[in-house]
Length: 276
Ligand SMILES: Nc1ncnc2c1ncn2[C@@H]1O[C@H](COP(=O)(O)OP(=O)(O)O)[C@@H](O)[C@H]1O
Ligand SMILES: [Mg+2]
Image 1: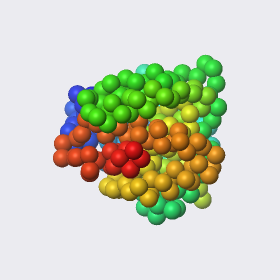
Image 2 (image 1 turned 90 degrees about the horizontal axis):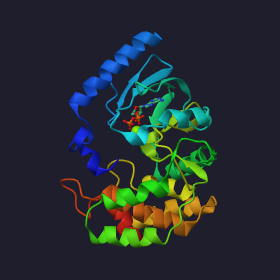
Image 3 (image 1 turned 90 degrees about the vertical axis):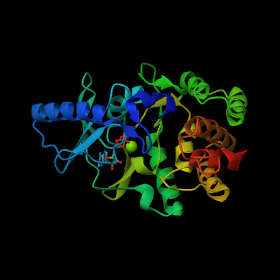
């Protein structure tokens, strides 16, 4: 989520405005009626969309039109086919509504120790990353990242990130999750599945960065960052590329600074500074 989208977002704590939430709630109620599923209260954790349980086995999610990163969420869930991700049960593209398999018990990876979270994330990632196929609708990271860097403002870290990005040659060979972190990794039966993809085509190393500054409230340290990078390098990824993506993505996600944050307290910028 980038700062310039704030016209449809509330200031901290981040999330959609009450006006957008009301609009999405009305759509959810209409779709739930048509599809014959019950609809519970909105889940407060769904900050960028309307998400509510639809009975014991399903979740109904409506994504705002303003969030173009979510345009292909349903396409990605359909492509993953319930393997490593929750299964897409039903979809209405025009109303941006999805009925999705509910993860049970559904607690997220933020409750795990860092050591366990690393183990679970590496094994979930192996299932998640798929070869991209021609004809897939997903956007290429190489088209998006320069735009996001341009929107990050004028800051020495942005100039540095642009210099690093200029040395990179992003691939389009792999379907990536796009927002892969603890809160989008849920316990399901004996295993773990991802939810909430912002799918793009790119390279696996791109996808690891968001794990480094999560869960919410985590204050990243150099040691922790190196543990994550080491684990994904052991799993076959390029450590140098993991570092470069963490710097580039950390910079445009951390800047411009949200109110109340500094380069010392922004989790994303702590990762960037630990790696420079
Ligand atoms: N399929 C699901 N099964 C169980 N819980 C879910 C599911 N999808 C979403 N949730 C819950 O709702 C919260 C918000 O959903 P998410 O898709 O991540 O929305 P957002 O795009 O707003 O981040 C999640 O953090 C999780 O707690
Ligand atoms: Mg989420």
